[in-house]
Length: 322
Image 1 (tube, rainbow, N blue to C red):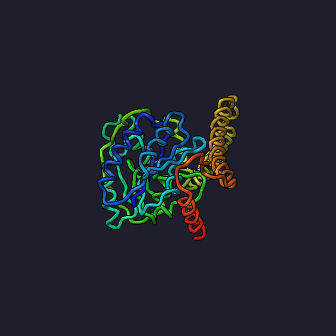
Image 2: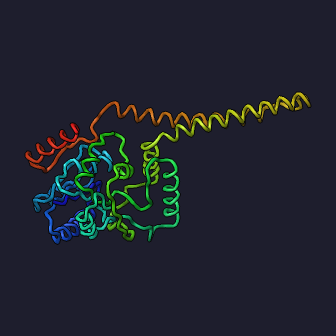
Image 3: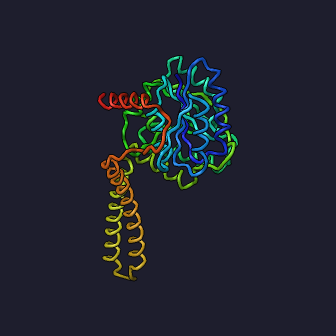
């Protein structure tokens, strides 16, 4: 069986089109399939469409959150509920072409645990593509794993890889990093960038910025180490400046008040201290959230049978014990 996990947030304009294209591809496969839609607290008619699709097709299931918990939680829920030998994650906006699913499955059958779909930047604005390239260059300097430009959540995971992801129960999740961290045998296929069929992107600049910060903080302590090095460097420069000023005073005497020097030093050092406090606070905040051990999401409604739920709970318990 092939499980298809589809996070959804306000996708009423494109959802039925996505369903038709995806089912057409899946029915041509030699495998059974299940389509798992995860409604991440949508405020439009996404949930109504999912109920209708589930009633039409017994292979379609849905999970609906009590509120918007974010795409990371939606992907985790889809993986938790999936029962396939392989799981494909793709977006509902058709920027992840369903037509690539047979290629993903083919390489899975050849023994790969992760088959990754990598897109190019064709059709994107120069500013967006340049910022993306810069982001990945900076990320790979900071994090302890390798992140590739154009590689996202669109991929196939074997059951072994899915179980490895589910065993990582951390609250602050950065799936791009987790997929890279678990390793396993990988194969990459390439495809051209595709624009949304309808609707508006959910990734505003502020969300992308926060997502980037999550990536840096989640996989290393280099910002903390960097703050130590920078602090030592500034301290050394400060000592040298004091010695230089003292020698100058001894030779020439005090020729002018030090107002400008004092203000500049306070502003510079004060700003750096605030930055470091923010970095340290970010790590402490994450420890705080992890210590609460809250669930990643709360399900308000789902279409799975009771027997499926019991089987899923037994599987999760087995993974926790392992």
